[in-house]
Image (tube, rainbow, N blue to C red; front, side, top):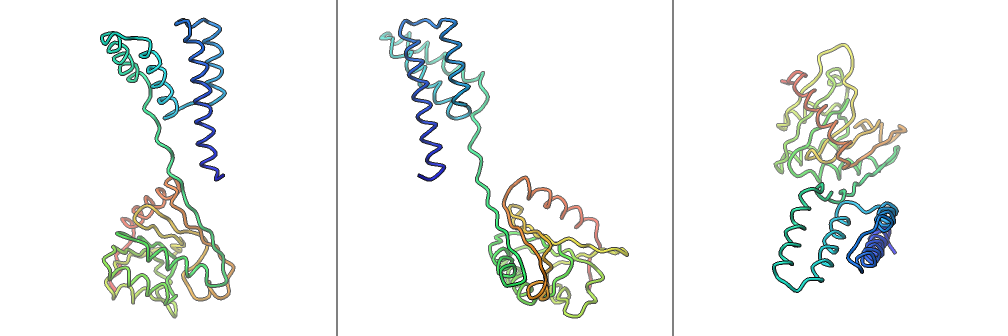
Length: 245
């Protein structure tokens, strides 16, 4: 059985078990100190929280309503259920599953992964890399620009002078470029797609990285990982100089 289905079945069984204990305590319409202690222990053991806790609470009020035939009494129980819900913290929605991919060079895996990353961007693509000198990646960036994706490029000013640099080609295609103006290097190698997915690692966007170098590449949509890269790109975009060709 898949892990998520197994976990769901386990939670359902725990809720059913707890409900049976509450029903036994409800048999005489009293809740003794010892019964309360045992129920509190059971709740702690099963780790009920969020949606499960709200569902169990709803079933307990339904159990209480079943004891009444009088509509007015049932209305009072329903009011108490609604009012008591205001005292509980909101149910925590289930965490969105995250996805991560890791690649290594030499070989074609990193290039193919970057091409897919660029191709999957729907609205915005922020590139912050030491250099761009692989025609395959240059072509992918220009294609993204032509299909309406906002592509922005941050890169190192010294690498503009390298043989094979494609930065001027990207600029000529209409992609806005900004560069550092220091004696040091803008040595980042990351990209953010739609502010939701980040690509990072040691991998340089060059032919030699694909054919010879030992490099690594990570792609993830983990929000806590992506957001610092989004913020750093915006900080550098504001700080660096506009490239004018």
